[in-house]
Length: 368
Image (tube, rainbow, N blue to C red; front, side):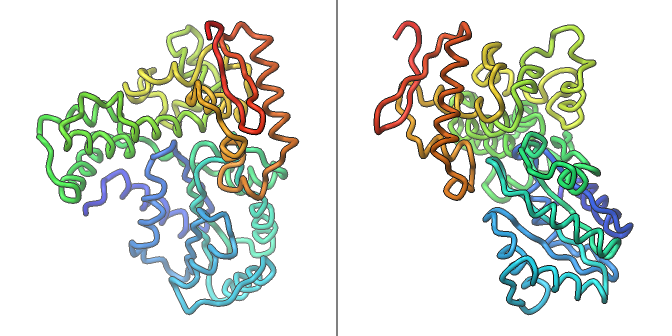
């Protein structure tokens, strides 16, 4: 499979950062290709001199397990049971050569990011002998962390956006899909690229639809809708408001506009993909601007399920993500429901939030 030119440029940039002993984060929207970039780092020979490179895939949320797995790729595994032992291993290795940790952070939820405070303290001790590369989704900007200062210095102080692919790189990705999934009509390639806006996840879903002769039905494709939902779910209510009202005068001068443009959501003063024009009204209305980011996620879940009942477990998974079983709190969930219900009552919203005892919660409309 060919590596698209855009990904080659990112790889070269990463290699330069490592050789300069610089730490850096690469952050992009959902389905931006950050998981693919992490895999490339593991599989491609970067020809790094005097550097020990350890990849840590944090999809399980277990930093110790990730370190053991990543270490086993470069040498015989060493038993690590806690952060103290992990520090001893890194400190020992740094005496021989520089250590670079490459983190791939999972999508969504309230992730456990407390480790980065520890990492910052290690950096102060080892200086240029310890650096890192971080891959994360855009939602990292809207997450809550206990030690904001250390987190910002580790994760957000030096960021390169992972942007949607340009036309040339999109063509290479489609060529790869042609070999992997099988061919499509050549006439469909241009439409796929235009609709996707260069988002690799959209490209894949649209390509598979074209294979099934269903490209014109993309608005009804469940897989594509899931991708769109996850992309929007990472944004704050104010960011969604910016995307939903791009034609308003003065929007171009706002902080949110410039940030969303920087990370590829806005291209030439429009949403980067025409697909999003069709769906943004489902995730944002003027009345939803009153919610916090987490409240909006829960409200959108209830709205998607309407008129069905949504269980407390489903809401818990939306609030806390992959760590919901560890973080779950009845008090916090009850508080969340209480705040959403009150905000709906105080607004001119058409929705009402109701409780079904022992089963969960559901929305009704004025006309129900």
